[in-house]
Each structure stands twice: as C-alpha cells, then as structure tokens.
Image 1 (cartoon, helix red, strand yellow):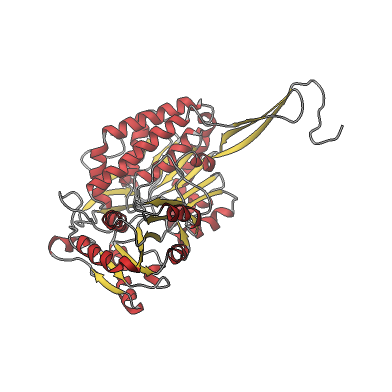
Image 2 (image 1 turned 90 degrees about the vertical axis):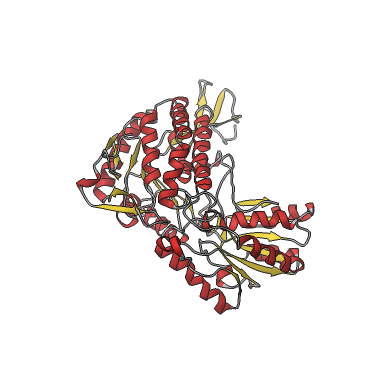
Length: 499
C-alpha cells in the first residue's frame, strides 16, 4: 500500500491525493506501550500543512457534493469490504501501537466495518421531509445538504472505530475532510486513509495531517474555511475546542468524558452483574469513555459482590495484548500510568477501602511497559474524588446505597452523563431507571460498554454539547437543512396573511 517507504515504518501526510515523505521535515515516533519498542515514525504537521489540506478539501468539495449520494455510498461499501479483508492485520497493528488486547482490537476494527456498511446504506436514504403546504398548488419539503470542509480530531483509545464514526457520515453526506488523529496512535488513521485511497475516493476529499494538538489541532480549530469541528477527548480539551472554534462560528460536535455507573440492586443476578462489571470496568484497561468506573451497590449484597468481584479481578492476567490468554493490556503512556496511580493515594486518603490492586505492575516483562494492576476501591462515598473524577484506567469504585431512590441519586450525582447500567429483576425499577437516569446511554442487565452503531452515541451534561454520533443522528451533525417551497399556482400567494 502507498504512504510508507519500502522497508521502513515512516508515514507522511496525505494531502490532495498524495502521500508526503515523513523524512522531509520534523517527525515524531510512537512506541508499543506493552514493550517500549518503536512502532512507527510520522510527519509532525504544521499550520502550513493544515492550510494545504484545507485548500485541497475546499477545492474537492465543489465536485464531491455533486456526486450522487448512492455513488458516494458505494465507495463506503468498498472501503468496508477492504477493512473486512484486512481486519486481522489492522487489529494486530492496533494492539502493537495502542495496547488493547487483540480480541478488543478486532472489535474496534469490526465497529469501523459496521459503520462503513451502515453509512454506505445512507447513500440511498439521507431522508428529508415532505409536508403539506398551507396554500393550494404549493409543495413544501426539506432536504439535507453538506456543510463543506470538516475537521475531524480523534482520540487514541479507539484508533479506527471513532474515526469511522466521524468520517463515514460526513463523506456520505457530501462533505470533505481534514483528519487529525491522536499523536499517540496514528497508525490506524494511516491505514484507514489508505483504504479510502484504494476504494477510489477522489483526491482531496479526505486529507490526513498527523501531529500535535498544539500545532495541527489548533490550526484546524482556527482555520476560517473549516465549517465543522468534530472532537472526541477530555472535557477540559473539549472546552478549549469549543472556545477556539466559536471565534470563527464553526459548528462543533463534542464527545467528552464520563464517570459511568453500574447499579446493582438487591434482587440482581450477581453472576450476571459480575460479568458486566469485570468487562465494563477492566476491558481496554478501563480506557473507554463508557468504562464502569463506579459500581453503586445495594448494601444487602455489598459484601457478597465485593468479595466475588475481588476474586474474579484478582485472576485477570496482565501482559502484551498479542499474547494468548492476556486479558488486560497496558495503559497508553507513562504519563497516563502515573496519573492513574496518583488516585491510589487520593482514594486511601479520602477513606475508601483499597480492596484489590493499587500498584503499578512492574514485575518481569511488565516493567518494559505501562501496566497498572486492576484496582477496586470499596465502601466509598459518592462525593469522593475517586467516585467523581474520570480516572481512565483499570480502576472501579464501589459505592454502597440503601435504596433504589438513593442509587438513582448517586448515579446522577456527577458532572458527566454518558453511560449507565442497572442490574435488577424488577421491571418497574428498570423502567424507572430509564425514566430517571440522566445519561445518553442506558443498559438494563448489561454493562456500560458495547454500544451499537445503529443507535445514537453520546451523553448529557459535561459529556458533550448535545450532538450524537452513530445512527441516523450522526447525519444531523454533518448536514444542514434546506427548506424548499415550490409554488405552481401561477399567482402570488402569501403565507400567514389573512385573505
């Protein structure tokens, strides 16, 4: 595939249908978080690179928006098929650069495949609205139209899935793109761009610029010819994105932090709840925005759940995600490892019980990477920092409650509102939870992770700014509505004017 020099892993930008050379300017390197070994070298972009990418995207938009949407969808279908053919290859590369275990990396790629096929189908839908006009011999309708050049800024924890959430709906709707992946994990962004090149996407429609947020990201935010910023990352960075983009009146879609809760009621199936907690709290080493970092448990089952959870989690195997049998991989970087570990002292000082874990794992081969023991805090109060702040690591906190009403209050008592779950055998409690829990996603008798691409994804409060990704809701982010009236009466008709 194009984009890399023979015998090396050095990647340049992709602008206007051409791959640049990584060696022609400043570069940066990524390393395997499990082993510390180099993975690849990438061009370190500048504002000038962003200018070139935006100019290419703006020029391509003039033609791409006029390509019939079903034909745009056919390119997405071809991209989906190519992704499916290379699923295993891309999953292994993802584990190498990001660290998640291979099973989960395959799921990440599969989500990208699913999104490509789903949004490819929207090329033959892109539904508008036709409504009755209030005057005779008059037609009233509304249609979706593309925005123009879209700036897509994606995180490191889902290096393929999240870019497809943003790119696929934007492309099928007729937009063009400047794409900046996280500088910790650009490899799958390169692969996705190569896939689109092979699928026949015209030059300039998708442009890839790698580099830092300060250099590339801020240049995208400030560029006057970019109509939309779609950003996934921390709430603090999201506030910066929103403020900078507002200077040029861009549309902004933010997908930010979470502090997600699983409620376990006294009538819950504890075996089922344990499965959901372990998967939701410790999958991807807790590095999901939907990770279950809180478990709100009824006191009647608190001790049993705590003991059984500690037994289960204590058996989880840490290691390189490419090794058979490994269940928890490394966290993404040394800085993140130290940040996660800083909460161990915070939790103990606040009075939470350290039930399990609490250390940086540095025994044997683990010392080469960024590993943290899976950690459980118990007996916590809802107001403690470990129960309020997003840790983004393999840490969950058990918070005991005395009633269903208190459980709902605690679940809602954080600044975020992304995902929540409740385990109960009472259908009335389940429906009350649907009514009263303030999150964008809610699971009943399942964990907090595993959203499917055909429904909207996003959250309330500090988790975002009201937009949604995935499902048909994603099209609302990347399109404008145009209302059209066709009057074939042959005379002036005045709406809302008495006659």
